[in-house]
Length: 192
Image 1 (cartoon, one colour):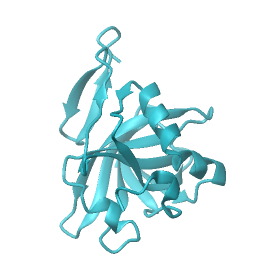
Image 2: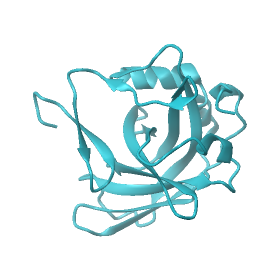
Image 3: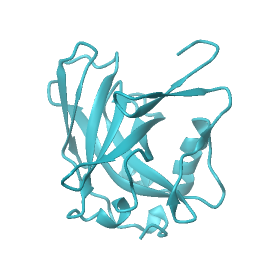
């Protein structure tokens, strides 16, 4: 139920077991996922903590909004020798009409923005925007650019029954990367 607070939702399994993409040199990158730790799961199911992560990342989170956890997994490179620090355009599968999270996916449409909460190696969290697309087979996919892999939670933000895109701090300029469907944030001061 999209109106059920995150902490009251049933345990969210890693609905996808993989993600694939290309690195800066065109090499294929594959990741696999396992269940996240109980500690990470608790954080990702804590709506106030998730909203704080979004706010800390510079997003304006409306008071009447809710966050819905679509899935989570602890992602690892299939080939741990690959260097992805320059960025990898990844595609993750969230599920389909046949997975147990189907009710939370059904209101997603091509181009909707979901947020990837990525726990970095130092234990801090970063927020990465991903763009949804739905395959001809009814699979819900998310494209996002990643520079590392570890626990990731996929969330959507709902307000008045609709998936919403959060406004970002005005010091940040948004530009769409149409080849991947992801939104890249750059700083006007540094260009990064």
